[in-house]
Image (cartoon, rainbow, N blue to C red; front, side):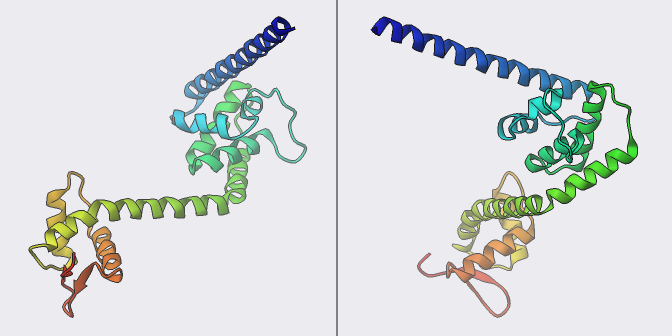
Length: 207
């Protein structure tokens, strides 16, 4: 009996490996198609997210699934792309590439209408995503600049503009005065730096 179970498990493993290989090969073909047919380069990481995160994308791309009565293949493609990549250009290019693959005549008005519908459908999601990216960007700026600001204020006082000049001398990649000003404001609100009536910042005694 143990031999039978072992053989059964081995066959399951082989079957799973074979299915995984088929999916991998199908994904590679999709990447190749889009590379060859898209008017502009769509990043491979974007195509990868489409394939991994959006179920059934390969079937839609290859037209091996039935088209929805309401949502056309074109709208399905553009909506899926905009959920993982906020780019109108890429959405248009994906439809054009799909038309080329299936020998479908280019239709300017359908392209405009489809992409606009997809933009409307994904508007709230993309807005939230952009806000999150902006927050991450601001957090990155804050992390990059805070240490240099504290270092400068150990021996100096200065306005945001003066501190920006000093901080950029310490960094390999410059930051703008807006980012430094925001960092100073956050540090001031947390009690990490002092600010006088002239808008000059200095260190706290315990920093």
